[in-house]
Amino acid sequence: MPDDASSTDPAAEPALLPRARDAQRRAVRVLGTAQVFSGLGNGATLSLGSILAVDLSGAESTAGFVNTAMTLGSAAVSIPLATLAARRGRRVALGLGLAAGLLGQGLMVTAVLTRTFPLLLLGAFLVGFAAAVNLQARFAVTDLSDPRHRGRDLSVVVWAVTVGAVLGPNMVGPGAVLAGWLGIHAHAGPFLISAAGMAVGAAIILTGLRPDPLLLRRELEDHGSPSGPAAATPSGRSSGWTGGWAAGWRIVRARPTALAAVLAVAGAHAVMVGLMSMTPLHLQHEAGVASHELGAHPDTVVLIGFTISLHVAGMYALSPVMGLLTDRHGPGRVAGAGLTLLLAAAGLTGLFPHVHTAVVAGLVVLGLGWSAATVAGSTLLVAALRPDERVPAQGFSDAVMSLAGAVGSLAAGPLMGAVGFAGLSAVLGVVVALCGTGAAVLLRKVPPLGST
Image (cartoon, rainbow, N blue to C red; front, side, top):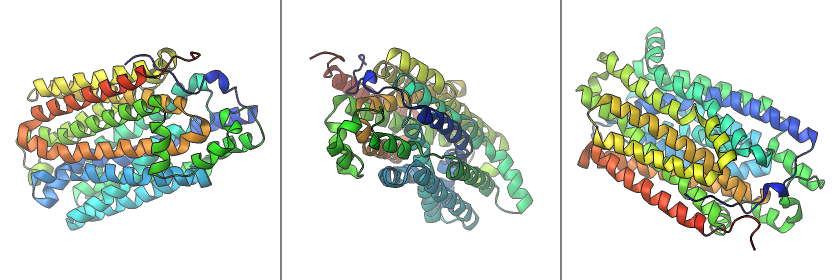
């Protein structure tokens, strides 16, 4: 994509007061630490979701339903979480979202034990609330961030998910051991470990995120501190601090840069979720193991967990590099590079679906592309808007991103059933190409900073 321009010049947002700088450093530490633990929460769902869906429903067409339910949950709660953050602060919103995810993990354990497919979907829906928290945490860390280092700060919190998210898919084995100790079904164990991680993450945020970065920024604006153009736009604040789809859409559609950012992150997420959610089932088919026999084939379970872990490592491990590149070369260029990597990933899995090393490499490249597009696209969205516009636009962006992921996951199952894993990869390659083209066209409409 061409270089981007922001509607807010970093020079217009001077450095905050020492109190705010100290709060920013604390926010980075607290949110980063919480992400390590809450990242465990999605691992078991990603690794076992499609397999459990087929096993409990008895139909392969439902393979994507668990990941769809999770992404729908994230989409449904993204705007309410943003609205709650605007009213009560990031600490309350993020903490309550993780608490709901904890309840979802409990429901998924119950679903495995009772073999109840609808309960599995309900649990996954609530786990999606925690996934929305993981997304909104990256915006929370920009509330007090220096505009010159916004991409870096955002990417550090994204990177912090690495430990939990990489360990999460590999909790299948230890989870089975735990389940054996407890005398319950092996597939219930990983969800118990994920629940413990979410509980720790929620406790860290609720007790440690003080002062609240969003509330502190508003306080500084109210006292006339140099914290950005919002202080001069009281009318904008009134509309900006209210939530809802309409408020977010009005803000985003008025700014081509913001719209390009939403298109980039939504397209990247749809392609990533669609391809990733079907990979465990594809690997299971390649191994010739039926869903109800999976527990008797530990090598296949470990292979699936290892592959997803490498993919998740690609998503998060190099996000600080993506942040530095974003600050240095501009979010538009880095987002474009990310979408190009996603296209390459679809090419690898589409051309070599029966070569395990190619599938693994494709999943790693898929994760790297998602990382670049998400870090850069999120930074682009923040930079494109006034501070008073950001919260509703962020909620809208996350909701659209999660909905796109839900569509990708929901469509992936029937598509793979109809055209195979290679055909699914080809379709997703077309999707990412279209999104990249649309974002590039939108960014070309934006005049360079300083032009009249």
